[in-house]
Image (cartoon, rainbow, N blue to C red; front, side, top):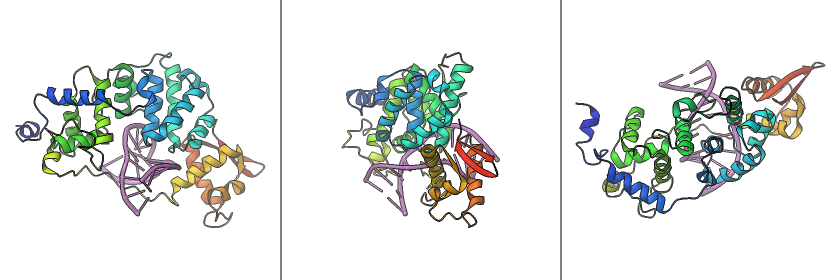
Length: 311
DNA sequence: GTCCCGTTTC
DNA sequence: GAAACGGGAC
């Protein structure tokens, strides 16, 4: 007997016949949900942009950036022609963080044009070949653009399954449970609905009654009052971190186009001193990492080191 | 200070 | 399997 079949013997496990649970969630979602502009489109490019942006940022902060981005680069073909520097500059000036992802999006647009002749793959497996598209994003784009995805498993979904059905904190268990729950052929509405549930009713601090969670009658956590959620790793401090310094380099190079080391340094650290602990050597190391990430170009001219955003 | 969070790279 | 990757909201 497998663990999974043992789990179905306990109250709170994923129901063998999930149709009641499915109907309740879909009805709840369709009756009322947060409105986001990317929920009004099925264009895979527009969906991909929204997914890449919202992997890293609260949804309310993504709306303006998404609209501005699509105004400026309305299609994969247009984005593919853009300068990398402009895409990365846009990213940082909209406070989206993770500049590598601007690069991935730019590269993915290039792949669509070069490798796919402008024809988007329509399934998660094909979409996974795009740069920056992992399992979550592949299923999200396949679902929201083509209604052709598998069940998404993000931290919202994990939290919901862990609480409602006592799914153990284990990736393959989440995968199986999410897949069993999803109604066949309805990935678009289902994946929207289950993530909405995690986003408004089953957050870290749950709001079961306030959000009128449709799963209260089946939910293990609602029954027991134990709203423990899977652990999320605590992140190292950002203030003073290398990540913060990288962000400052990108911002400064967006503003000034091209800077010598000693002009850039003070914009990255107020205590920059060419020969100090945080001096040329340190800055050069930071720039070399950014260069190998494909974000920055470092050039020697007349014995001076100059940095700019990579085109 | 704490929370948010998926993908790439090694 | 772990580390690196951002910056704003609260």
